[in-house]
Length: 413
Figure (cartoon, rainbow, N blue to C red):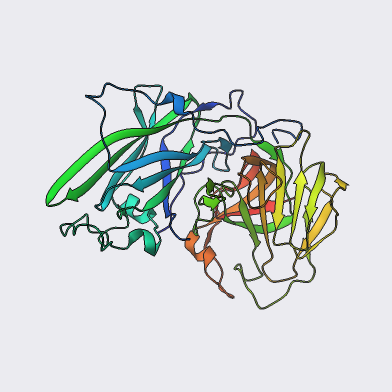
């Protein structure tokens, strides 16, 4: 089912004075199972994503503290970026783990403003929650080593929002917000049901407090030229969930949090595979930078100075630069294959690595909106010569210092 962003506001053409000011009227949340296996270039960001501030966890009197069958923790700190709908987005993730011997049904998750007496700033429940859940077969399989639960809503086969005993999942949260309501910390209210032996139980508890990183996004020039490019995956809702955190050396790494999969529409308006284009598509340096790595399929640029901000390019057919070379904004650094629907994977990350880095928020200096695909899942399936359904009235016009939204059709000058 397609998840929809709010009706787009007129694109912001000037940066608000207070980027840290946020309000949260809406939320799109994505559950994925984990058991399957510039400002300008002179700005600065930490080289490593800040860890959740566990010192913020409130120690309450023991009489008020609740034992919970699931654990909830923050995987990635919320970071702010201005997207093409005119809202500030804060994509981040929390992780859930069922520590009990019984299936646990997650009924709802609320994001709360921890600085305003727990005001609810985002909600997910009911069918919307179930539609957002994705768990691996290992995560949802019944366990024969645990007591047989009573049949009903807590049966692990009854709902994708059920955590089987011992299983884990992440919750990818995207809060899209207007400017100018300060939120420094977020916490989460989680409501769950389960059946222990034959006794049905319910519990609501608050957990997973985290600080908001409202540092300016990195501002970069577009990596491509021309019209007809589609953000087939990206901020802040995805059809195939490529931004789910992955485990690297035993640590969850949200490397693709703000990554874009840019694909060009063919002459029929789809992602064809048979015909070839007349020439390879040039790929451009998004800023003055130093080449860290260049292979036949990828390039990494150090946007410097001081490290901590790297542009990564993948799916390249060839490269035109070498490691150690200095490049300038707009310089051709490689090409995409001459196919009917060339594609580029692009991101800004905190380390010079495709696998061990964390995604950073970034915004393009300028691009044009040419509409939006109305069926996001259609972008992940082979379309052949079939055109994608595009609404030409959505997310259109000039965009300055914003990040394209998934499904948006783009033009780069």
